[in-house]
Image 1 (tube, rainbow, N blue to C red):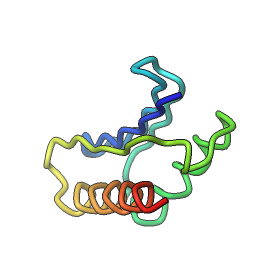
Image 2 (image 1 turned 45 degrees about the vertical axis):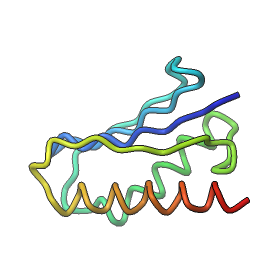
Image 3 (image 1 turned 120 degrees about the vertical axis):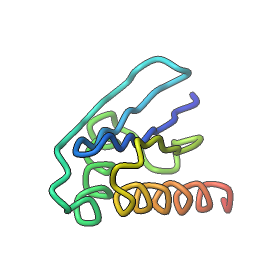
Image 4 (image 1 turned 30 degrees about the vertical axis):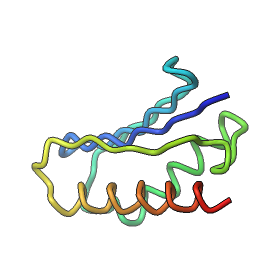
Length: 90
């Protein structure tokens, strides 16, 4: 199983897309009200739990952004890089 998580920032919308071998497994989205730093990890955890997964089950996390919100995009990139670093340090 190769699960990937994409964090999409299309300001003001934030979307998490979980895929298994390119097939959509789960999706969650919300309007960013300058609270992505408080909500992103919580929503990632909920999405993984809903699909009976752990962070360790992910192969990679990546981001895409329309760059309208520098701060939200930066938080998403740092979160993805941190998770990816932890996944490679097994």
